[in-house]
Every structure is written in C-alpha cells, then in structure tokens.
Length: 190
Image 1 (cartoon, one colour):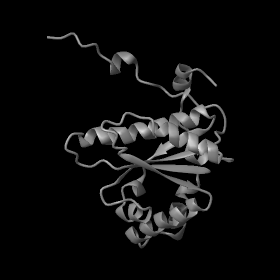
Image 2 (cartoon, helix red, strand yellow):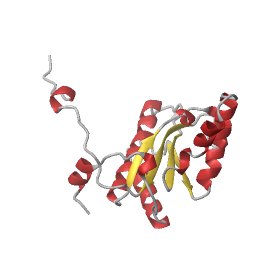
Image 3 (spheres, one colour):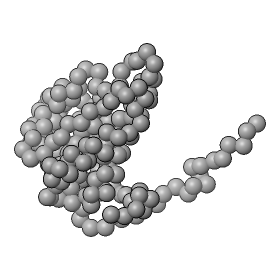
C-alpha cells in the first residue's frame, strides 16, 4: 500500500462507465463504510448515512430513476428512459451518501452538511486505497424528490452523492490543477 501522502497525491476520478467488476468484496465494502464514517462530526450526530447498491438492487433503483424521469418527461424517447434505468449499472458498486443535516441547538447545519461531504470524500479515498477507481456523482436524480422518496430518504434528507466504485481501466490520467499561488494565500493581518 502506498504511503498516505502518496495515496492522496495519486487519487483521481474515473468515469463511472469505465469502472468494471468485480467490485469490492463484502469485507471491503465494510472497510469502505468504516473509513467513510471516520470524519469530523461535531456533536457526534452522524449527520449522514449510506445506502449500498449492488447486484440487482442497482437495477431496482434504476427503475425508480427511470420512472421519475418518464413522469417528468412523458414525451421522452424510450431509449432515453432506458438510459436513465441504467444509471446505477455503470459500476459494480454504488454507495449513496445521504446528508441528514438538520437544525440543532448547538451544531450549525452547515457543519453537518460538510461532514457528509467529508464522508463522501473518505469513501472515494478509501476506494483508491483498496485499488479501486471511484467517481462521486450528483446528477439530476440526486435532487429529484420522487427518486429520493423511492430510495427511502426522509423528507429532510438530501443526497450528497452517489459514489460509483469498480476496477479502473488503467492508470488515471492527470488533469491540470490550479497553481497553489492562485488558490492559497497567507494571512498577514491588518
């Protein structure tokens, strides 16, 4: 296993449709979820939860996505509805990160939302550490109430993202990153 800094420096996203099987084993899924849950969590609220989609459950969830799409766009071509049905079939494993952020007397809701984002990022990084590729996706259906209801989200819950995980097609391509001089400053005071 690469050292932690090298691991973080080499993490890249892969297109979900490029990820193939076999996906993570049940023990690896448990490891992914364990690592994902080890994030800053002010007040120990666990303001996130996970939904694991594997095997045929991906197709069942895809049916909910396709139904919502067809309801929203009744004149859509059948091939477009079929493409929506296959959204969660692009990788052998998809884990949804659900934000359960809610008003709290002490813990700002924004901190709870950030914790869910941290859980999603830990999940992506853990997949990389296990030798898998991952892609964190939020497409239209992550914001569609009919889909969220069909997937079992409560009215106050929001989708932080769908993490697609599978075997990468090869080494990831590097992409340009912003120069540190453009994104980091040092505070000098008044």
